[in-house]
Amino acid sequence: MVNEKVFKSYDIRGTYPDQINEKFSELLAYSLAKKFNESILLATDARLSSPTLKKSFVKAYTSQGLDVYDLGIISTPAAYFALLKHKKPTVIITASHNPKEYNGFKILDKEVNPVHGDELKELRKDMKETSFKSQGNLIVLDIKKDYFDFLETFVENKDANILLDQSNGSGILESEFLEQQYNATILNKELDGNFPGHEPDPTKSSVQEKLRVKATSYDFTAIFDGDADRAIFLDEKGNYIRPEILMSVIINQANSSILYDVRSSQTLKDKCLQEGVETKLIETGRTNFLRYMKKLNSYSGVEGSGHYFFKDFEGLDSAILMIIKVANSLGKNKLSQLTQSKYYHTSEINFRVSDRKKAIQKIVDFFQNPIKKMELDGTTLVFEDYWLNIRESNTEPVIRINGEANTKEKRDWLIQKINECI
Image (cartoon, rainbow, N blue to C red; front, side, top):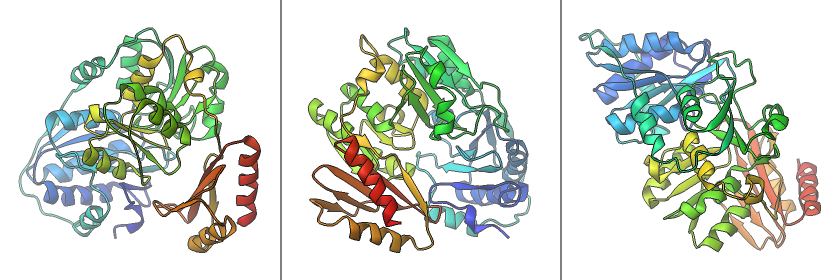
């Protein structure tokens, strides 16, 4: 029986081997062979379970007379590049930033559309034993040279002194490229699905804390997640930079709109307004950003979890491109100067509750008479000197709250009142 819980809003993800295992991988391959009916690209991350999941997937998919082009262990953005170049459906075996006991699948069609939502439900219905048709081939495809050539076209400032934490994940090509192009130091470079350096989620303050002192010797520090599609940045003082505030550093390169989500600081919108750059507020979620990047032909997009989307990359997200563009923006000013904000953000506050709608309504009822109320991706309440957004998690019995105030005192008051409501 296929576990329905692993089919998330944007991808497939669960624990190995109880939720996702070799049989699951095999049945998914049969379903995808029926859906695509053509050769595909296949990449994996560095997780301990990835090799056996890959083996069962390849065996099933090629049994349908279809070829699999093996990209090996590479990052999700590197796999995206292969998709853009070779125009084939792409499957990435990865659980991104989740702990080591997880694994999963990211799937895109050859038109660079993520397979998600209802499409994943349809895939699940077709996950069943399928008889052998004819033998397809497993073909090794090395994209390193083409990928490096592509990335090099964006490099302008090679003088940047960069610290990268690879997090023992699959960003091996990105690490090598940075070493070639910059004065770059790489930490946790060894591929190891046990993630001995730290857990593969760079948004965790415990992960950032390990680097704060070392970061002071570099122009900036970037920390990858497990599949290197996300990165969190620290400035030359070792301080965390909110992703949307970091995006404001590169808006002088923008030739169209910039997308941001409901968690974002007002700082980005203010700086875009100063530069005459249009902004668009959209729902949180990778697939939402991909959809709007195409629809609006936007220059870039930034999600609060550290995804950076670029028109230069067909609207897809790439942490390495953000690293390059930040390096290009460094001049006489330090990154800490370029990312100053006059606002005080709460950071995301999460509450695990039994009744999410009731909990949200309780908070909304408390913060009365807002100047503005929006129902985009939860509820956003805007007041004269602060705002807050309350939304339900897509995957957990959790509500997520973000807010921001004009003063530290008001921010602290906001956090206190939010906690009193729950």
